[in-house]
Length: 218
Image (cartoon, rainbow, N blue to C red):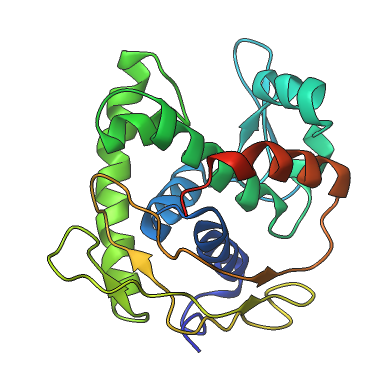
């Protein structure tokens, strides 16, 4: 299995990042880079000097979460839980930055942290280094391709199944199409079925899916 060489505390992060990347058609090494950079843990709340908190594995700021709660009912408790929900939400958010923001891929991805240039720039630089490392890690374990290359195949991912927690059962990904730092970002794979354990806020997930579906690249 491709994740068995990881220490137990990293397995959830990597499994959830890869499945979220496939689900929301974001480069997997980018999601992994953000997850590693944020470095959060389930249940964790980190207090900032401005009085806000960064919550959970993907360190969602409570100011951002207030907007999500008003629109979709997503709360800090939802993203603080163990499991893949916070990674799904982070990949959805990254997809929005990549599709809608200005600047190069890395600047747009670093908007996950901050749009302010003085904070975006160092986060961007670190993200590039981490993404390169994870790109190498992924290419050694999965079928990967550069969508910008001539004649690149339209590889479709097989079913990614997560039952229980990642520590109980690993994820099986067949022919996972994982992009290694391609710019511009293209959708890969085009079709994927993801079956995962019950999320903590299913109504919020449905609301996100309803809003997100019209913008999906097919």
